[in-house]
Amino acid sequence: MTEVEIEYAREVWVEQMFIQHRINKYANFRAGVLLMPMGIINEYHESTAFNRVERPIIDNKIAPTTWREVGLGFQGNISRAKTRYQLYVVNGLNGYDGTNAMFSGSKGLREGRRKASKAYMNQPAFTGKLEFYGVRNLNLGLSGYFGKSNSKLFSNLSKDSLAKIQKADSSVVGISMVGLDTLYNFKGVKFTGQLYYISLSNTNEYNVFTKTGTKFNDLGSAMLGSYVEVGYDIFHLLADTKQSLMLFIRYEA
Image 1 (tube, rainbow, N blue to C red):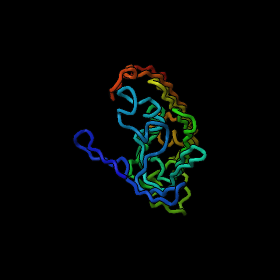
Image 2: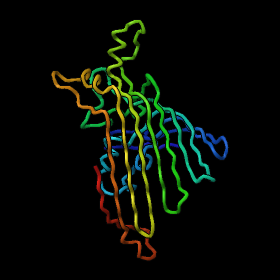
Image 3: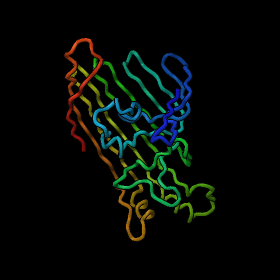
């Protein structure tokens, strides 16, 4: 499975590229460049998949789409439970590149993506999602991402140097991200909602260590984001058309 794009007329990006092996009817093994199964938009991120030109704020700053990393794991469908699942181990977000902080209060976690081409790993992260589709026209999702950020200061670090280890530890942030999402379609009506909560640890040490001059970094100990959107396809009542015209309203915070 591959998705390769030419962007901005000057860059070629591999947005996903993985092999999949069917173990049985309940489980498939995957390995390669994987899209993180967080929320609704990250796995289906083309602009026709969501309303408005810009993605919701939380899908930009908190769950930083398009978010892909190198990893492996399992994906499958439990038909009796009307549930799909994904479970992966991946390289973690980059929190410190050796010179600069990748996380901040204004930019969120977005700068920490490695996009596979710049991937490295001091320690892994774990991500997964459960999707329930047992009610007609309704999809409910629960996703998570857990791990510590990676830091270039751990590269070739001697375990005998306590001072350097403590310095490297100050450049690491613990990340526990949980997301809920829902999607409902019925007779031209489309309802979408997402809620994300991220708990961040070691942020005081991180903010002091990554200060610029006398200005401390402003990464908080938690992030919370949500949006709800209701739309109606006014072409739904027209016969013999594959076109749509969605009028919608979104509230996000």
